[in-house]
Length: 112
Length: 115
Image: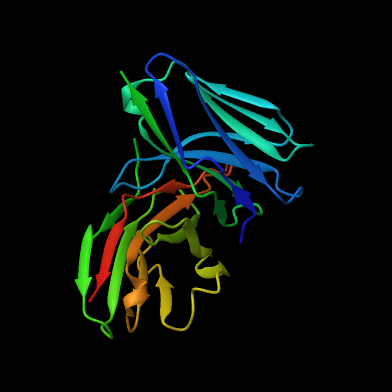
């Protein structure tokens, strides 16, 4: 089941620079998308979401961009901080209050 | 801030034994979920629960699995006869407090080890 793909397993970025994480999906019917952050031995923590009626949503240092025609979303973190080092998952809502389908995750390492 | 809680944090059991994983969802949420993550793999959906019944289940959620909301606050996942391949992190999630957003909030997980 490859409906949600995060093709970069890892990303290394310097503190203070921008982190850009990418996610592609295959089903054009999906219309709500979420990003989660996960530390080892913890549950996923909700970060930010976007609905298909928007192409951008911002919350502090986090911005999510949605390109519906390309079936692509991205998460920008700026500036990156050491505490941002974690695995980031994108997820799609398959139907109203239905299951989430997750990507494989991208491990972000923020270096000083 | 309200959060989802799960107990135990780690459960070790022998193959063939029954286990019950417990969750307390966020109190005003209406939808409840179980997911699991086998080491090195994706987070995968198991089951969703709404209005005291299962609303959706995956092919993983076979007759060995069951869910219950026994008392209006707890939400449990039972595995009747555990197999080695059931070893994973199990996450409970909840959502749906009457808004239009579809965020699900996850608990810290239970690490299940089947020996």
